[in-house]
Length: 202
Image (cartoon, rainbow, N blue to C red; front, side, top):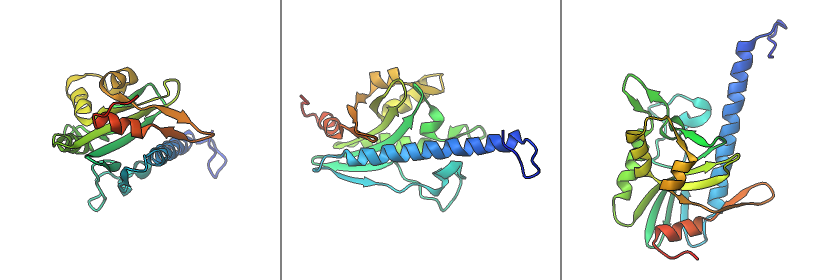
């Protein structure tokens, strides 16, 4: 229970503080996943981490007109192919669509970040380019999958449920092998790139 300055119980304020703490924890976990992913890049791959929108921090205002609005998290090139990766990490066995597509606007009947995934899928339609949403299911599942942006869009258009279970990601994506160091994780990005490049992975 949170106690206000008058030393009275204030469940509303307490709930707000817990929500802020959860958002900060999720943010830190997401940033660590991104950092681990970047450190997992093979040395012959060029990798650039695109800057985050200021609106993405702590549930900020998604309608900021001056905010950066990038297509994805990572821009990666390894001869002869170019790759876009949007990274998501979740503790539960199913990831909410709002975690991928942003908040839903009932008035406009669309998700705020739908264009990001749509643009990724459009980019992947060009020869030599791929675009994937990399979903890291933590917790009991503890598996990571690179799902084509086009498949994620198909899920949104054809499925009635509001979250993507790990089983669907496993069926429609490529599993990325992973192993834990003392604290952080390393991901077999090299193996993923080889599969996307059509090279045999032993």
